[in-house]
Amino acid sequence: METNDLELILINISGKDRPGLTSALTEILGKYDASILDIGQADIHHTLSLGILFKTTSEQSGNIMKELLFKAGEMNVSIRFSPITIEAYNEWVNRQGKHRWILTILGRRITAKQIAAVSRIVAEQELNIDAIQRLTGRMPLHEGEEAMDKSCIEFSVRGTPIDKAKMQKELMELASELEFDVSMQEDTIYRRSRRLICFDMDSTLIETEVIDELAMRAGVGDEVKAITESAMRGEIDFKESFTQRVALLKGLDASVMRDIAENLPMSEGIERLMTVLKRTGYKIAILSGGFTYFGNYLKQKFGIDYVYANELEIIDGKLTGRYVGDIVDGKRKAELLRLLAQVENVNIAQTIAVGDGANDLPMLSIAGLGIAYHAKPKVKAGAKQSISTIGIDGVLYFMGFKDSFITDSSNKLY
Image (cartoon, rainbow, N blue to C red; front, side):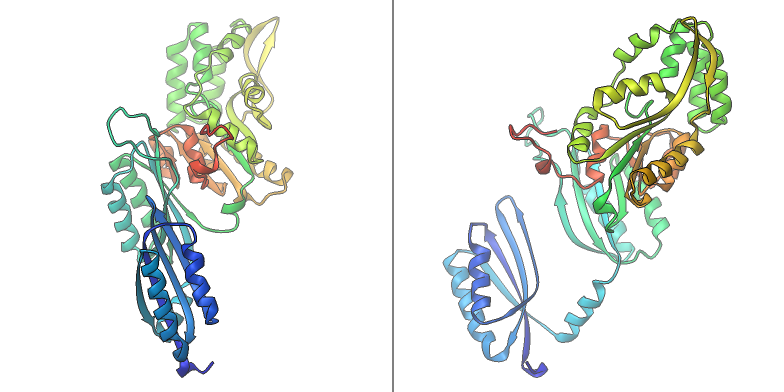
């Protein structure tokens, strides 16, 4: 086909969606041996938007457009034709090699104001939005109407940010200001094939710090809680604070641990999260500065694969105020994440880490996807992704899951 005989035509079809529409239109293109160079479709509330860029000859283009126009009228949809120059097509092709990003915004409700603010940051970085999709179910029309208690929208973005660090910082600040959560991830093969997820336990999988619960039973609750909060803010070295807190538990009857375990307040969404992770074949680990007794309780409850935490020394049924073995601190968590990635034979980029405290930052920083969950300010400031507005099952949306993909045969939404 000679270049001067070549025609590139973009058709845009819109109207009420119906079965067989795409088939009917592409059959006409096939009849004239036209080559499809690009195609994309979206359906919003049964309203179709379909775009097809095709290549044909000057001799055939008139017949193709005539038949497409008649078919569109027959099927009661609108069709628009736009000629594309070879120069414009080549420029578009060259842009395809640029980086691609997945930008996810998440919250109880997603508003136009939030979307506008995020879109503005994307535009300021000279990035193009290729696609937008909703990952969560329908939104309510009226207050009090039963509906999803969370909303998530995912942007597919192309290009190289002018200043990626600045963009990341602005997104996190915006999320805090407008009360939503945000994730920006490069869209690589690793993002689509993650296999290992590691969680902190206290104030992440459960809504308490177990050492504080033990301290209350020992009558030293206020003292231990003050040390815990200081450690989680990063004001005290974790090993030092851990040793101080455990020492205050000396003499506590070990039998109280069972009662505490059986009454742990679970984080919102944990059962849904664990069910989906297990169903989709993820390996799950707890890497905790807490205690193995409680980690093993969660392991049995949810089918968790690995638990690494701290072991309390018990003699004659009493806590001695000492611990056994090495402390699982921030450095150790990062080492364990690397070790588990090797054991599971996955690239570190295929791992996910979720935590809330300063001692979680090392593993959040090396994981392929590090998420600060309802975290302290210092931790959020050092994280690239954060969830603060909904439950821990929000992790699923940052992983790219859609509600429609995670329902069972009875249509129960996990």
